[in-house]
Image (tube, rainbow, N blue to C red; front, side, top):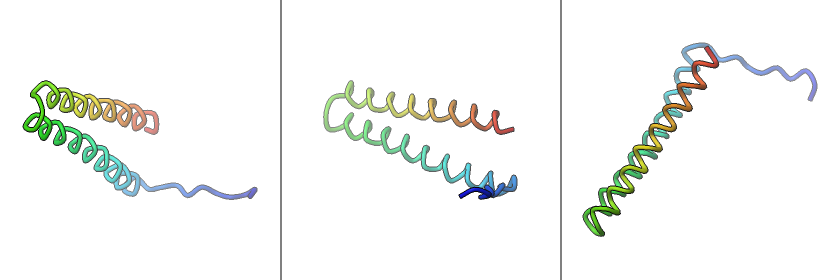
Length: 74
């Protein structure tokens, strides 16, 4: 396995990969928040709001991680 070279991505390719990853994180956060909206209508408002807040916090955490990683790469 010695001598295996890692392929370097161009800036455009790196941006496309970042878009794909961000898209998945956004969908995950949106699904959790949509579940919270569902719970708000079917269960109690407090339960629904809790899920919505969890989704929002998750999105903020992902955002902070990605911005930190992107700044390190730059």
